[in-house]
Image 1 (cartoon, rainbow, N blue to C red):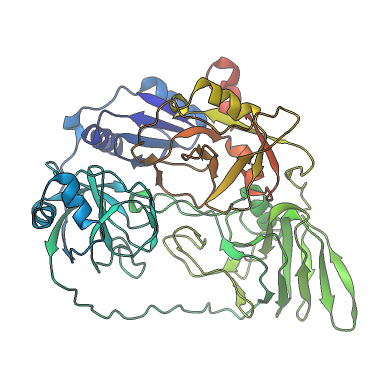
Image 2: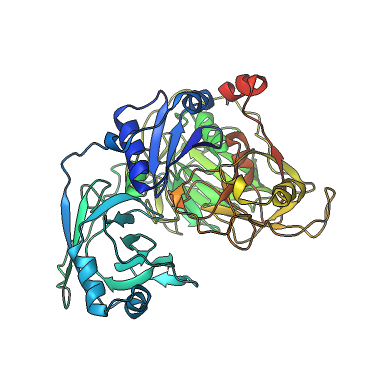
Length: 533
């Protein structure tokens, strides 16, 4: 079965993992036109395209793949040493009716296949053909599972590459280097590999040389004096790395970031600074040209013995050596972008200079005293001032277009109506990973504040995710995924935000009111708009 997943993606629903892997293999070897990436999962394959019309063509023409389509290429086997001392080992034994020794024996005597990537870089779902260790996730997930923990959930085993929340049943731990950017490749495992576990009494730690970060050869152009709430390097992000569990990341508001670059004579994809709520200060060490875009804020240039100069937004601004740019707190919108002629130089990590806040890939958030450098000495012509793109209106409900599905059938009809009827408020507990929404108590569109109820209360096997996906966790309050979202997720997606409207959510301050409206993509009436999108 094929299900729409936003404007440019199709979710291929399969009978089981074997069928999903067959579809994945088939599409790898016979890629459809416009294919961007494939994300295999437990019972699905997410197929993402460049354009909406390519997704529509695929949905109309794809006829499936047989299990015989799996291409058996030479696989690499990894032997991973495990100390079986997990907190849930006894519970797993009780649930399966095995002794602790038999649980360990079952885990180590299986050959596990690396099926697909999970919620974080280096985390993979491992599958065995005759797995007797099928156990449910914990009823109450842990807030912090330690790095290297080996666990079981459903029909899968897996290893946590870094400390993170999780609900898997923990049976042991390993010191295997699952994710290390100094390695080539950075992930120890990849889909198609096989894994065998070996029980050991203790690990022997081998010291690894500390990685060094080389400073750019250019002299410092700016120095950070005040960083504000969060000041990050961001560019277009990472693509084609979902097989390692690496999400795209990149600009939260691409329109504003592209404008900042064009205003100073860069290519749109050059690295910029992304500031959460503004409130940052930088001092120029050399003459340069900068531009501020995104959230509305008041900014000035100060210089000893000189009057302050107000800095316009959405226009190129000359910043001379010795001058200080002071950016105020955002008055409308959430994220301010600073472009500099030549683009900012930063440490590259996994093909991008972007900071991914979920996986901690990329440069660390900037701090006071950090020196900033430019990547290129030259650029293209400085652009004319641009028309500032719209920002969320703090005084009224902001309409956000969504494409319903792919898991709308997991919710009651009343909940679907309530999803569109309710005015939602952006929670303070939001970030670059996702926007959390809570129902307003009252509003011009009605006073119905009940949470979204599910018709299907089963546990959804993890499946691929995209920016704009609106997941609904058990509390019934939606979470809209943004740039740093995980590659896969385990909550049903009720709808997906139109790509053109996603930047409005990325620019929504806590307290902003959101109302969703249905965007239809099927039928001749909408095909022209789909192609433009």
